[in-house]
Image (cartoon, rainbow, N blue to C red; front, side, top):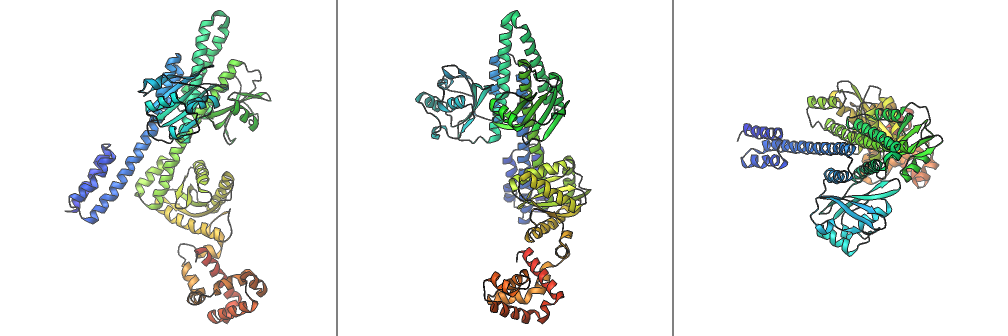
Length: 615
């Protein structure tokens, strides 16, 4: 077989990718090449290409799944904004819940005062017994959700003893074949009006982001249900409630307008401006950490944390010193807060509208977070490829340009040491604000930021990241780097710098090799650090290695104690005569002038470098 045969298989991989073929067909190319007798060295090329093709396939699949989820969420908001029939609202909720979570079945039960909760709508159910089941308050998972107003999730219903299992309920669940169940409450004010579920017929974990997503949909749907019921009541009430009907129509129009803004990709300030216009007041939006996201028409101070917590607990807008504060929630998760100023006399209709603005803001922040997470993942993968040279430089430049990073310009490479999980989120935010990249490589978080001032970038990153994670963060820097080829070299320099900072006791700071004096010079690209250590301390290292002595440790302690024999013997836990004898041996190995000023500098520098190198 020739090289042309291997190329034929590589082209086949490209053709399959272009045709959107599945992973099974891509994985079949390598066995086919092996069966065709392609030489081993060419098979390696085919194997690497197959691995990359499968990775691209997985990335495309993940992106399409996220796009499908966002499209379904937009469709849900559109449906709920236009639906006025309660039964149609419920069917739309359940259908979208099943689609969003990819569940085998979704269903919704409604609370009936004094009679527990009964099954109202199902999607994907095959059991007539299950469709007719009724749960008492506190019975089964759904009864517990309805009673506590909190989400509950179980990966294995029948093995879960947190729930009050009853014969009729367990029989219905078993008849439907359900195993994993997630239930979230539909709440109006403090009242639970029903429970929304997603379930699978096999074990499944529902992660927190899926719980938050289903809870956000339930909150949005509860308000839509409330609107539908109120409209029905208003139409039936006649002349005596025309004013209220007009208020609800205004609230409905405003809700539709806000939802439409979100669907068209509006940002937080645009939505805040629309809320301020509708309610004729000032609006301030904060995230969960209290950082301001938007301020329209007011100079009032941020909402007090106590007011946000009170609104979060009650699920209602709270008056506070002439302002109104509404927690922005996705289920139990606090996403932020929205504050209305200059409207101390807020009526019931406008209060409901303000609370609906909080729900729309929650949807907007969830979508924004999803987009940010996807973008951070892309940036992190780009960091990995830049440092492993996995992709050619032309492709790397193009990918960087798509996320707003021009690699042809000067860039500083930073390597940060700290609590990695929290540090990565903070680094991604810092890099995004600087129009740079952040990701994990090896044991550290890596940032690639535009600019050429290494010292300033390192100090700023150590300060900003340390404040964000609440712990000291040490940052080494390298560069400036030019183009993809320079990033890897700058990264190696930054790693050496970080290691030196940590070993030299400068934890929690940011710096460059130039900041480290002689150590920095010796750690530079062209320095033979190991050779310097060997030429200076070689006789001691060899003597200790061959005889099991501690001459290097003795000299280190001697200098650390200011050349004081008494303090050195305490540090080493030996008799002073032992210290003297060891130093005499050092003199015989290094020369009688080893304690002269010039030699002392060389020896101490070699000892520090040996510590940095980890020898």
